[in-house]
Amino acid sequence: MSGRLTIALDAMGGDHAPDMVVAGAALARERHPGVDYLMFGDEHRIGPLLARRPGLRDVTTIQHTPDAVSGDAKAAVALRGGRNTSMRRAIDAVAEGRAGVVVSAGNTGALMAMAKMVLKTLPGIDRPAIASFFPTQRGESVMLDLGANLECDADNLVQFAVMGSAFARTVLGLIEPTVGLLNVGSEDQKGHEAIREAAARLRTLTLPLRFHGFVEGNDIAAGKVDVIVTDGFTGNVALKTAEGTARLYSELLRRTFEASFLARLGYLLARPAFKKLKARTDPRRYNGAMFLGLRGICVKSHGGTDEIGFANAIGVAFDLATQGFNERIKEEMPRPGATTGSDIDAAAV
Image (cartoon, rainbow, N blue to C red; front, side):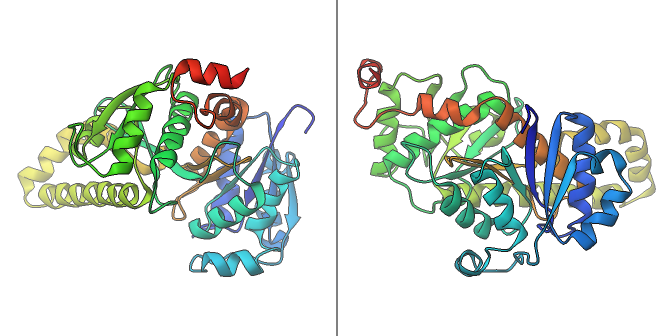
């Protein structure tokens, strides 16, 4: 890769592909000029789009693929019959060392299944987890798992805590993130056995994180901790609930300001403040979920995003690839049987 980072793009993944993918890559190129792109997809559709962007065209190679994974495809079906899809070929490029990272806005289940099969998991990781970040009252927080693993044991939760901490340090620039386990209460006796066991182990491990203990649902938006760890079932429900609540308040505000002349006048006076609020909570700003725990870096963009959101997903991929994210996880993951700092040191010798 001649010292430059190469990013593989599933150009046919997403509701508005390939137009959105090409436009997003053009925007990302302005922010990260030292990047080359491999675009996998229909060259007859991608080529004319690149022709209108000579700067991007000069750093992009099109890899024609005849097929694409549909948004409603079952993961198992895509896995069996998707060898020549743009998604699979983009993942293969990372496994073969032709690219440092893959970004796709395609089918989440298919992307996870393909990435796990092709890239495999890192040493010490039983299951990969989906992680992303979102706004809070204190700034931004990371949450995982967001849907990859519906049921988790204590080992999985401890691994998620280590990976989530590394993700927060890499993407958010935190030195020593605080980590909390999402639970039905903050008391030590609350929750099921797996989460209590995970908490006990995290209190004894010497890691570059600060374990806060248990957090509850209302602590997420408050930003009580930097990293929220939970199973995929709970994490996905929490994420969708937050997204739905944000849309609800946006709609209620719109209706309120349209209710009367004075309300519309009030909106005009407050419009600069509302623009700042919109920018702060814009989901495109937080686009780019990472499949943590794989031997290669795979970033999932929201399928319905536009070029701004996709460019931000590329930015997440750039940060993870250039800051040695996977190396951090391999260095920090507790060895089997390690329970304390001295045990970890001894196991590492």
